[in-house]
Image (tube, rainbow, N blue to C red; front, side, top):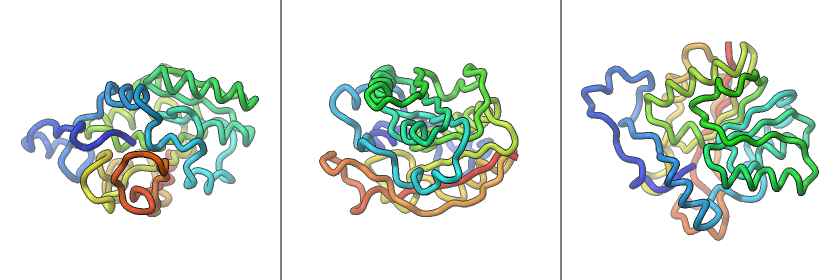
Length: 229
């Protein structure tokens, strides 16, 4: 997830839109890290709910072996799968949530690796993963960075690996929160080198005490299961 739309400005002019690899609504710049730094400094972000997002729990019986959690935040999804005996690596660009994730792992007696790492430079990990979790990272990216992201994902996965991705849906009214994404955008973005196995409507769970203005019941979202081919 990410801060309000006012922090996510439109990027280049429509003259360049025909060259985009990700058709859909108007392009926007990738949300700068400073926005997230401010949120972690001021309070727990709305998505930091102290437990994994339910959609990832629902597919937990499908996830075995090595797991990469992209944009892991304070590590709840990663730690859930570590408790399922998966070999888990969580990455985040910011130091503060990584420190908190490591603290939780120690406190809970779980083995997991948490690294401060740019998710657009996944190849630097020099490791292959059987599963990738993306809970709220894809939807902060510009069209250009979506292309970079897919290229980097290809460097850390082999055919047969599976990406589990949850993002804001275009069913969530415009306003607060990240870029909205349609199922058509997801299918178009992952049409080469990947096979979209399923996309379902769902909700993000946010903290009840968070000062947000999302839809009642939580922000509308999409949960996609996408396999590398």
